[in-house]
Each structure stands twice: as structure tokens, then as C-alpha cells.
Image 1: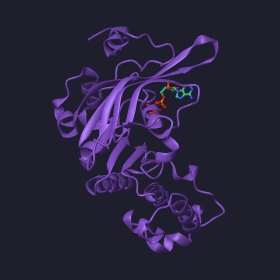
Image 2: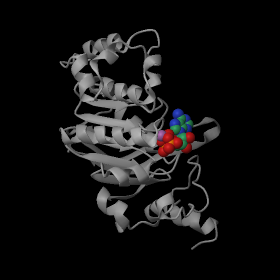
Image 3: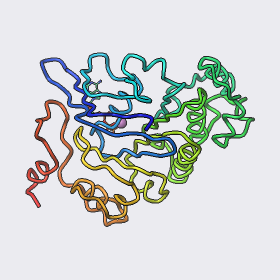
Length: 280
Ligand SMILES: Nc1ncnc2c1ncn2[C@@H]1O[C@H](COP(=O)(O)OP(=O)(O)OP(=O)(O)O)[C@@H](O)[C@H]1O
Ligand code: NI
């Protein structure tokens, strides 16, 4: 196991004594060669988990539990690990590319900054982009190319852990499948990959995930082999409802709405939500 989260709990204080329960007792692990998908409705705390692993939590956050990389706590040394050991693929490539410089010059700079040994051309070929893309400016990249470029940047420091937070949010269905297959390929080549997504249909179609964690209202509600959970083997009502809500399964709408995580009661759970809408 390369990365190990043990009962990670994140509380973000707000003005007026309010507290966001952004993650509660979340335990999961990432392993070499495996792709671990994390799903759950919007606002449930998925990105919080990625932020805790990459040192991007707000400075005011109170964190308990642990996040370990190869057995050692990452807290306080996220910046050392970042890029070289643990890399983040963002939702949109536009967040880190400077419009005024070519992809090649920015990628070269990133490789140097991280002390990477892989040439920019080779990085592009790993994400199946033609080396000629090095000459292009960001606005000349299509959405699919830009997102592949984002993966190339993440690979610049030869990390063994790759965290992708909604990497396909800006992509159409075909490009989504291609990007998920690329992440699968990175896992199969030895990386530990975490994929945060709300696109359960794409997970079912591509079968890219080995492991699956389902988050509801800041807590892990179900965890197991993705193939089993996605093929009707889920135990938790929340997971079953999420899957039943897919268009292919009849689009049975999720009952009610997810709660806000601000001042969330400790004993809140999915059954409370069901009760609020009249029970089942
Ligand atoms: N810096 C912050 N200050 C206050 N609240 C925050 C902060 N960051 C996140 N939150 C809150 O924490 C909760 C979890 O957010 P998070 O981004 O982890 O959810 P998510 O599952 O990634 O959502 P989405 O699917 O929309 O990306 C949300 O209610 C959000 O409003
Ligand atoms: Ni998010």
C-alpha cells in the first residue's frame, strides 16, 4: 500500500462558530497498479480528500486521523512529495497553463523544477500527444488535448501516486472514455491512481476502476471491488440509489437533496434523508 488514509477527518471553521464537516473518518488506501475510484454527489467531500493528500486544504482546517505515504505521515511535507511522488491532475488544464508560452517551454520548465528525468517529448507520447504539440500555445489545444497535457504535467516528476479530481468534467463522452483509459494505463504501468468522479456511467462502461469508495455527506458509506459494487453487488442503500439513478437504469431520481455539510449533525446518515422525504 503506497498511500493510506486512516480515519481522516477535516473540519473547516467558518465565521460565527459554524463548522464545515468536510471529511469524517475516511479510511482508504491506494496501491501500486490499482485505480481507486471515489464517487458521491456534489459537495459530499470528495475534493477535500484529494486536497488533504496534496497539501491543498485551507490553512484554517482542523485535521485529525492520518494520511501516510509509504508508511510516513505526509502532513507538513506535502510540498516535498508534491509532483515528485504525489501528483494532482486538475479538473481543467487551463488552471495551470500560462497563455503566453508554448506547451513545450512550460513542460520543460516543470520537468526541470521537479528534477524529472523524462523528456517532454516522451511525456507527450505517454499521453498519446504528438511531439508537435510542444510548439503550441494553450489556446491552440483542443479540450481533449489540453486535458492530456495536464496529465503530461502531472507525470513530469515521475510520481508513483496520481490523483485525478474530476479530470473529465470538461470533456465529451468519447474524450472522457479515452482519458479514463489513459489513467487505467498509468495504473497498469505501476502507478497508484485515485480517480474522483461523479460519472458512474463512465466507470461502468470503461471498467477502469479496481476499487471503489462511495462518499455520502463527508463519510465513506461503502468500499469494495468496483466491478462488484457497480454490477449490482452494492450493500448500502445510498450506493444502490446512486446506481439506480443512472439513465440506463431508468433514471430513478435520488430522493430529496444532499445535506449541506455546515454544522452537519454527527449522527446524520442517508436514512435521515430518506425519512425527510417520506421514507421508503
Ligand atoms: N475552503 C472552504 N471553506 C468552506 N467550506 C468549504 C471549503 N472547501 C470546501 N468546503 C465545503 O466542504 C464541502 C465538501 O466540499 P468538496 O469540494 O470536498 O466536495 P466535492 O464532493 O468535491 O464536491 P463537487 O462534486 O461539487 O466537486 C462542501 O460543502 C463545500 O462547500
Ligand atoms: Ni470536488
